[in-house]
Amino acid sequence: MESIIDAIGNTPLLRLRRASEETGCTILGKCEFMNPGGSVKDRAAKYMILDAEERGELEPGGVVVEGTAGNTGIGLALVGRARGYRTVIAMPETQAREKMEALRLLGAEVHAVPAVPYTDPAHYVHTAERLAREFAQTAAHGALYANQWDNLSNAEGHFRSTGPEIWAQTDGRVGGFVSAIGTGGSIAGIGRYLKHRNPGVVIALADPLGASMYHWFKDGDLRRSEGNSITEGIGQGRVTANIAQAPVDEAFLIPDAEALQLVFALLAEEGLCLGSSSGINLAGAIRLARAMGPGHVIVTLLCDSGQRYQSKLYNPEFLRGKGLPVPNWLQ
Image (cartoon, rainbow, N blue to C red; front, side, top):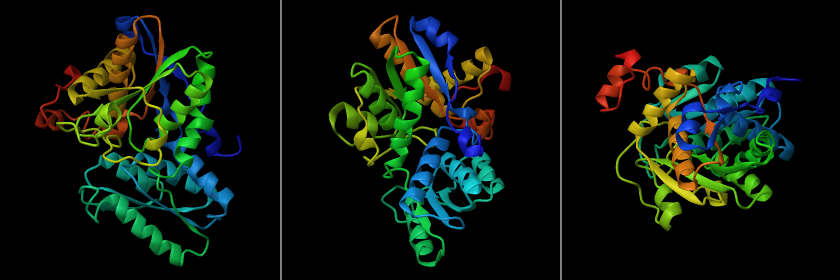
C-alpha cells in the first residue's frame, strides 16, 4: 500500500450468529467499522476527493468543506491529511462529542451549529455550503464542497468497491441487502451493483422513526414517520441525488428500542461494539430474512464502532432519559 487511503475498503464479511440462527438465513455484517477512519463513510470520502482531483477541482493545499453528522467529516479529514488538504466541517452541536473530538484530533476546523430543520438557513448543510462558497473565492489551490448527499461520487464509490466486495465475498449467493439511509450513497451504489449482477437480489431499506424514506419508498409520500430516534447520521427527510438512484424493493420502519436490544446483544454475545445505525440495519436484515424465509444469504452494513457513541448510546443516564433499554452490564 502507498498510503492510508489504500487501506479503505476490503472489509471482512462476518456471520452474525444469533440473527442467523433465529431466522434460518445466513445474515452477514460488512465490518465497515474496520476502515481506517472507523466507518463506512471513509469510502465516500475517498471517492469524492479522488474524483474531484481527476476533475481538477483540487490540488495540494486546497480546502475540503462538508456538512456532516461526523463520520463523513472524519473520513474527509483523514483522506485530506493524506492528500494535503485542509478540512472544514459544519455539524450539529447535538452530535456525540466523541465525533467532534475525533475531527479536531485530525486537524479539521469544526463549526458546531444548532440542530435546526433543513428548511432553516442555519442548518449545518446550508452552513457548509456558505462556507464552501467563501473558500471558493479565497482558496488559492481550490475548494471542494463535498456535498455527500448530491455528489454522485458517493454512490459510485460503493458501486466500484463495496458492491463488488459483497458479491465476491458471498460467491454471488447474496439474496438480499439491507441498509439505512443517511445520504443514500451506500444503498444506491451497492444496490445498483448487486442488481447489475443479479436483478433478483432484494434491496431493502431500514429506516429509523421520524425519517421520511420509509413512506417515500412504500407509497411515494415524503412524510415523516411518527416518533423520533437517537441515531446519528441516518434518517433522511428529502430525496437526494444519491437516493434517487437507489433501487429499493422493500422498506422497514425500525424503533430505537428494537435496534438497541440488538446492538447490546451483539456486544454481550458476539463481542461486537457497534453504533446505533448498525442496530437499525441488523433489525432490517432480520425482518427481511423472516419475509424471505430460511435459506437466504442477507448482507447488511456494520457502519461504525460503539466507541464513537460512548457518551450517549452506552450511557445509562442518557438511555434512561430517553426511555430506552439499558444493558445489564451498565446498570
